[in-house]
Amino acid sequence: MTDATFLKENNVKNFWHAMAHPAEMRANPPKIIVAASGVEITDVAGKTVLDAVGGLWNANLGYSCEPIKRAITAQLDELPYYSSFRGTTTGPLIELSAQIYEWFKEDGMTRSFFTSGGSDSVETCLRLARQYHKVVGDKDRTKFIALKKGYHGTHYGGASVNGNANFRRNYEPLMPGVFHIAAPWTYRNPFNLDDAEQVAKACIAMLEEEIKFQGADTIAAFIMEPVLGAGGVIVPHKSFMPMVREVCDKHGILLIADEVITAFGRTGAWSGSRLWGVKPDMMATAKGISNAYFPFGAALINDKIANAFENNKDSFGAIGHGYTYSGHPVGCAAALAALRETKRLNVKDNAAAMGSELIAGLQELQLKYPVIGDVRGIGLMCALELVSDRQSKEPAAKALLARVYEATYEAGVMLRVSGNTIILSPPLIIDSDDVKKIISALDVGLAAA
Ligand SMILES: Cc1ncc(COP(=O)(O)O)c(C=O)c1O
Image (cartoon, rainbow, N blue to C red; front, side, top):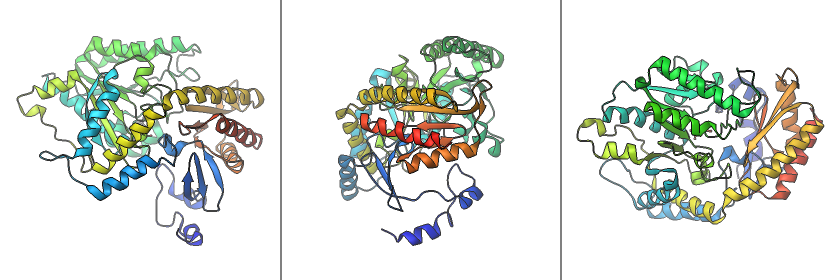
């Protein structure tokens, strides 16, 4: 391992961190993580903590998944790369597409388009949605509708459908023709409602209104996360996504499910769409597909779209889109092994069971600490929203969240802080002792607030 003194001296010197202010990172250098095992990570000072972030919602099987490591090494030896652009393909790609078909056929997904991550998958879905309408002769359908608070990655298409000003403002102007409606968020919504079902209905009314205003025949697709992740773990009422599907169908609008976080078990179901009983037209996936060990993703497509493209006889059906690393054989090998392990360990059921224990523990903390305004989550995606006043819901100060973060880390658990929200997305293989450890470390962290 590189000398610890060198690492500390050169930390942030020559590098800009993603999703961070460079000046702030220089003033407050990030923790240097040097090793990981099971569900734990170790920093350069030798401190080992439980990773309640799960990498970045992606190390679903933890850090010691030997079958994936072996598959990557073997594939590097056999065929480290070949392109899947027109004219060539590879064995792992063909095998993975067959596996993905089996995995998602219950969701109606029958074709894959492999990518290098979540932003790529979203971009592919947005592009193919527009192209689909051109293929079927509906050429005015170019607009997108999305949810405020939604996160869809960082390419220009994805950033344009993102619903959080932090990811938009500094990069404007974004793509024209994108419109947002309120998120189905019970804790904070513009309707002054506190009943989840009523909030869902109000959002749907807003969606109908926006479609009418824009003209249904100008809208290509609606994109949403089945459970909003980076926006602060917003779990819609169970009626919301089915109602979205109904509205989309009524108006000929495609439904894109951004399942970058929710696919492969995190919510307690194999996909977020399945959790809500909805079949989208397309899905964007990534993260858990390779258990974080290789940058990989897949945009998935249903029969309706596949048939339109495959039966097309003019140039509109030709896909003028793709990435050098689309279907990278090492990524495919990693994903094949990750899917096998994900299924063998049946992590969705563990996510559901451990998620219930985690939420129960967080609710107990809420009884103890008035600073916890809201506890929410499903499966192993949970959040605590910290407020300075429960009545007004004024967000807690940044410095308070920083204190909670540091004290919790000292007590043995890594958290993720986003604005005034603490996000928990541990590996899906955690057990009850790990849940207890997260709760007791948070207890220490919150006491330090
Ligand atoms: C729902 C969702 N979509 C897209 C993305 C972008 O994925 P990536 O960071 O792999 O490009 C993310 C990343 O967190 C995400 O949570």
